[in-house]
Image (cartoon, rainbow over all chains, first blue to last red; front, side):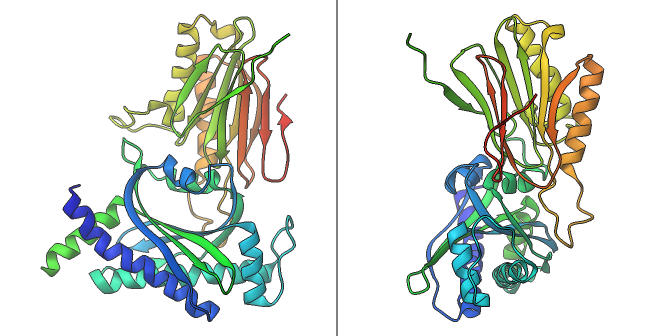
Length: 199
Length: 167
């Protein structure tokens, strides 16, 4: 893929990633700022490395998406931030080291839903592609285990993936996190086709 | 006596490494549905490990990292151990990983890659006449596995447990 094609894709994916953070702000009722947005083709191992190494523990709210194309999205939250967000969403913090109860799981899932749907809506609006999210799954585990979900898709021979990464933070709420989107080659091709058709 | 500090060599997705350095530790970090296949020759103090992602290769795929596929990684691991002076009959084989991390509603029909990886490994062991000496597989949680070249010890950790030795 040429630099021009990559930057065309970025012109669709980056606003989608920003829209996902706007969705998060709407849900929390406070301004959340996207501190960085990147879109690259990277070796799959780099997803874990960027997050602090494959053994680092995160709360991951995972969603797949289906329709005109498939792919993966994950909202990655540090355990302390997860607890803080639950305090904001349901009025009580999570006890560290204990499993989430049904209400906590549902609140975090809804957070993932909002972020993921906001991203997909933005891509659909820009390209006309029909994309729908899966139900969210809340995972507390090493990031490497979450990356395996992506790796289990038959990757290209060079084991590289497209990765959109948006880091966000709110000083007022004392929260920060990362939203990762791994668009499949299928989605990248579909976006490219939609862009060509729109010219 | 001065002893060398252990050196951890991380084995990435689809990689295979063999080491005879007694101070080395071969490690697969944060395994989910992937499986780690560990081989150890106590006579030569030679250790090898593969980090496998998918059960089987399709024709023409995986040439850059063949160990990504269980069906290719197991014979390659044995071959590399033998090339470095080991004998197949001395190999102590252990397998770790193969979890199903997604358990939520809506993912029931998603293929259980972890289970398929484990099954592919069992079939490969059988084809090559290898005996599996220990395993820690399945579940819905990630694992880190470390293989110590010094003595063949295999340690496993999860976010719930500190290192446990796989017998």
